[in-house]
Length: 484
Image (tube, rainbow, N blue to C red; front, side):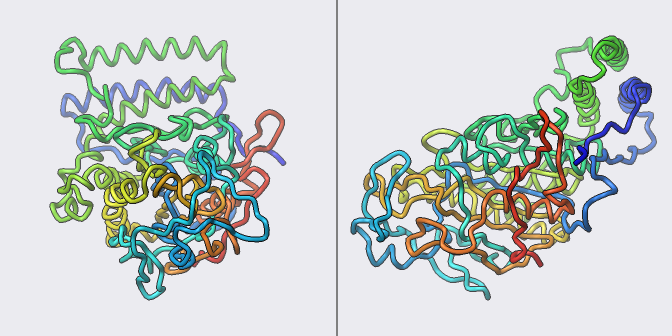
């Protein structure tokens, strides 16, 4: 099988591109500063390797992924199991002599959900009282009720759900999508990451890496918690010496250095990535301030996302930014809930009763708001919304009322373009300990997302170290039961 990546430009074309491109940016910046531009230029898309030759008709143009970092407890949120209530406090014994182990503790007794689950919507989906806003949207959601992971350790589990591999060094899904489809515009990144303001997740930036794909496809991390989401986008007011003329001269010198470097390193794609980053930074000086300016939204929209409430303001702000970004042509946006570490995330070892409610409260209203907002604006017709986590929790206690890691079964959902709302695929056993029927792996999940984007996951490869690598490795099936 031939690799899909082939350069579309000769060396001469490449030299012209970055030479003329940087000069054009300098000129544009100069004219803009002097107020001599009659109107903003039309943004042109940056093509990916599959642009114009997708494997089949796409249903989706862009993706927003909400990642619950730490392992959201499936039986306390979505997976209703009466057996846990019936046998509360008893020894956990699944029968048939099955060995019971936990990742970081000794297995305790059966732990019943501390919060009531009720059926909602026409589909009758069970949802915890911790998620009242999400409960009102279940008829738009397709649940994967028996997802499984090959690990119950955070680092490998997070890599697996993001890159398809347990080890570091492989491209994440956002990078694969950026590489395949490119960007719809050239003044914003194709792949943006909005981490929790408390910090990066497990694996840090490894979750957003482009791996062996061209560096330009790695995730652009935007910190939305500060006064300036993108630091150093503009020169400080004190730097009076930075003028349009100085910018022009600096870019000319940079172009000279790049030409000299390229002459001896014409096969190094890192240079093209650097050039692209400089070009993008210049263009974002004009586009980014508007994209991240939430004061342009109506008061009703800001309240919908919970920006007027301390509990929901952070995650709500990032969900609203995600909507504004995809609205402006960003291809893939990942919004994280929870930083890495023992607390302040979905890794509820110590106490489900104390640790799960604040995470649910912070994300429930903004999640539902994002879905409703996308739907009301018509964006859900070609946008895919994902809710994921790296693995689930155990049906027995850790300590008094905590739960340990469980790769045996967990829950995720998807909504939007090409997705059949109100359905559920798969089922866990009576304990929500292991998948019992129609399990879904990360490979199946990734294959389904790519399929909705018009990409056959088995044909979409990149040649690396003698192998045709793919996001789904050598596994994966499209989960057609959740497709409309």
